[in-house]
Image 1 (spheres, rainbow, N blue to C red):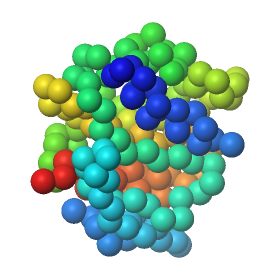
Image 2 (image 1 turned 180 degrees about the vertical axis):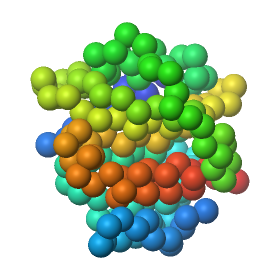
Image 3 (image 1 turned 30 degrees about the vertical axis):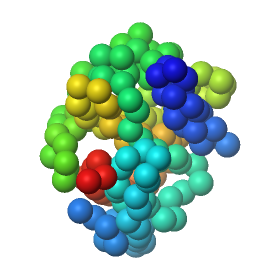
Image 4 (image 1 turned 45 degrees about the vertical axis):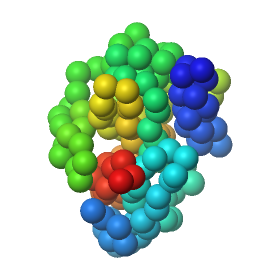
Amino acid sequence: MKKKLLLGALAGMLVALTACAGSQAEHGDGVIIMTPYASQEQGVRGAWPDGMPQESFLQQESVPLPLDEFYPLALAQTDLVELPEPVGSYRGTAFTWDLYAFETRLADVGPETVRVDLAVAGSDATTYYVVLVTRPDDYIANAPLYEAAFTHAVYALAPLE
C-alpha cells in the first residue's frame, strides 16, 4: 500500500517533462509569484510557483513512509543505484532538509537526461520531499529562476497543524 502511494506521488514527476506565501521569487528580468496553498489530503501547506517554465516540473509531497523506505522507491524511478552525497542542507519553516542535485534518466520517460533538485526531510513515519525536474540546458539558462522557486518551495513546505 505504501509503495503504491509513493509510486502514485512520483508518477506526476514522470509525466512532467512533456514562509514565502505570497512572496516573489526574482530571477533576471522576471518574477515568479509564490502562491500559498494547503493540501488536506497530503497534510501539508506550502508555496506554489506560478509561471514556471513548461519545461520543468515542481512537486511537493508527503508520503507515509520513513526515510529508509522512501529512498529505495524514489531511486527505482531513476537510473541511479544510489543517491549522490547531499550538496547541503537547508533550514525551512518546519524542517532541516537534505539537498541533492543530480542528472539522471527517469523510468518511462525515455533516453533524455534530466536535472533533478531534491529536498528530503522526514519523521519516524512520514517523508516530506520537494523535487524540481528540468532539462539540464533549461536549468542552466534559467538557473536563478529555478533556484529561487525551489528554495522558496522547500522553505515553505510544512505539515498542517
